[in-house]
Length: 215
Picture 1: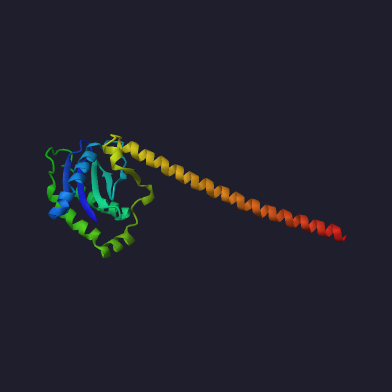
Picture 2 (picture 1 turned 90 degrees about the vertical axis):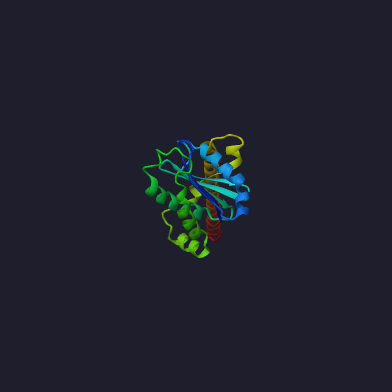
């Protein structure tokens, strides 16, 4: 489920639009996450990754940066990341079409709060199970989900580490894991070839031995 959506300007972290769960209980529960989302947007800079997922307990923050604007969503950890980023892609296209020219000039927070109407509409389509299956089958242009960096929200907010640094660490770990996988595959292949070679040498030796023995 998508619980929170925020749109902010990357240059200064100014919130431009937002949407939260409509029932009062959910809003109370989401206050902490709303605060974290605002802090996160203020930490963005030119080096921040275009796509990133930050784990926050049983929730995930998904972040997409496009044309100087950050689109952020808070989802349950079980919600597919591919769907979360497809949702953010949808929002980014529509938001820029509507407000692209005005984004650099606004100074008041939530200047485009009316965008919540569109957010609610799109969110409903992504949450609906049947729509999710359809969107998953037709969304072929989204980047490989394995290339989306994953970090932890606490590292960014409490330890004060830059988002770009967190995702660089995650990228390095991913590259190391991939290298380990390739090395292991290479060693397994060599081991297999060595076994075949040993068997071949054995049979060749046996044939030569039998041949000379009987001759």
